[in-house]
Image 1 (cartoon, helix red, strand yellow):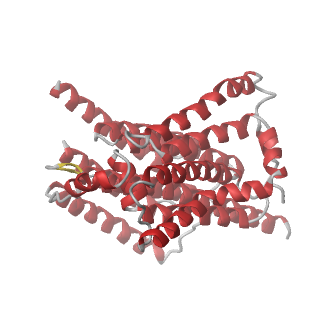
Image 2: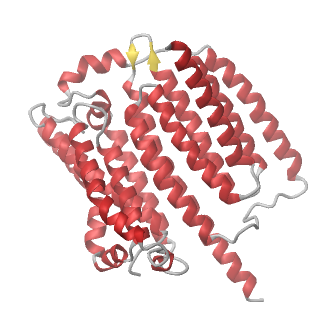
Image 3: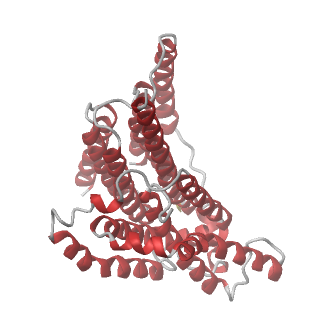
Length: 312
Length: 94
């Protein structure tokens, strides 16, 4: 068994290095992006090997799914072949080589110190306080109770990115409808209709599971967002729908952050500490925050994909 | 086994940094930044496996980091697309 596991690890590592090499140094952009998406899928397997199923779920949906869709759409909107952007001057060349040599040296040092890393950890402390958090899964407890402030800031970063992308103007180029391959592939809308119940069912299951096992708001939001992107790709209707419900869209985009803040301030009123929930309320509050966060994450991932504010 | 993955993370990190400095294509740079982020996440999760069990705090940091990485990617891609559009418009009107 251990020989088998060792072989699997070696195969994974070789595959990751090869895909990363292809994504970074191959000539054609399209194959670079496809290799990169495959890289994320292998990363999800690595997370499983390292006993991090929460990360594996999120990585498979966000990394391979949403990032891949974002990159492919960007690829379609950029001119093929020609290089966009940086064109280093002659005097910058030595600096570039210096930076590359520095990176090489730094990596040798990093590999050396990574080999001798000390292993401190908070595993004991988290297990000891798990009973006071209102959930029984350690990752969810840290995410939404013990280190909830980090999660709040992360939602704020995501919302800021949506604001940045949308503030650049209305969606560029031909409207999304022109990309919908429904006319070329008549089976695709039917497939998306067929799959859509699962894109609702799976997030609900993941949300429910999050309190006691790997799952929770992040994978749920990611799966829902990926389903939304698929819906945007196969049909023009959701796009129109978003255009006619701008206010609702804005409210839902901010819902996760707003509820998070309300809970944090409510905790301050009740217990005197920012983000401290009374234990008897904690499970309900965490569930509510998880649902709102998952909805917001799903919508924000869809919002990224549009590359501009709909309805402007 | 965890040392093996730590060394893999270091190798990926170096490859991403060299790719980042070497390329002149902005899209390729975004890819390099993403690979770099994955390498750092891998290192964090590897460190999380300590003698007293699995530390959930780095897992949460990585989970947060993945979402922040996709936000950064989306913002950077939007900027690249806009910059390219502006340049094309600039070149069209002589």
